[in-house]
Image (cartoon, rainbow, N blue to C red):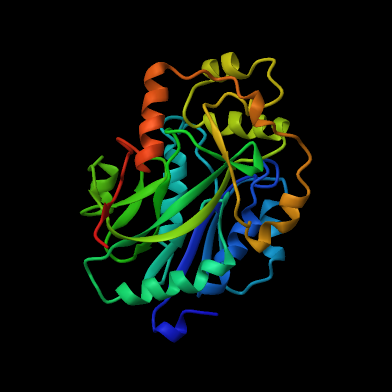
Length: 306
């Protein structure tokens, strides 16, 4: 499988640092879209846990590594994540850029559908990106986050050559007049996108509770100062998966690249132990949303045109 048939080029890209230590399925993530990419650029931050070596072991000539040193002083709003994403973006040579964060995976059964949609709108300059539906796993590979506070859709394929850069903390993208304006805090313009109705498997809250605690503390270090981290994580060894409003059972099939990881889950998760209480207002909102099948007031960093 490849994109030459469609006379266009798709470049995959991501960033990673200490992926092994923090339990990211980054190898599985790369492999999940490698078949549809003519190249895959990965920005690897300074680390000593075997992350870079693991990437090299994939053995694909499509993969190109860019080594970076993270600026540890960037400790607000997840700025470092956008910084690393933009480094990769600038190196791409494709017509389209396919972005996956290190805990995001595409099911192999959806690759053909994705390619066909990108081909369909490749020559339509109005289309600037493609929107995916997110399956946000929580606590176990058998459950999904079912709260109002987890994004359910996001852009993961963008057109290159139109000054698209990472928005905020690299969750999404926007178009800017120039990179200079981007650095000068220009608000950017929401991308016009096609909604693919294809699931993206987001394994962000699925790790052994001790490893999840370590990962969470490291992640928050790029949003908060040491005082906050000490107060929140002092004497805490395991992540509390039960401090959530609700989850729902996952009834689908995981991507093939995740087979062994899912099989080897070595901790228990019991949704009956969820302890966060809902207010009367929250219960009412959830009830309405469950009936109408629509998220009220959901944040949307995109403009759907198809």
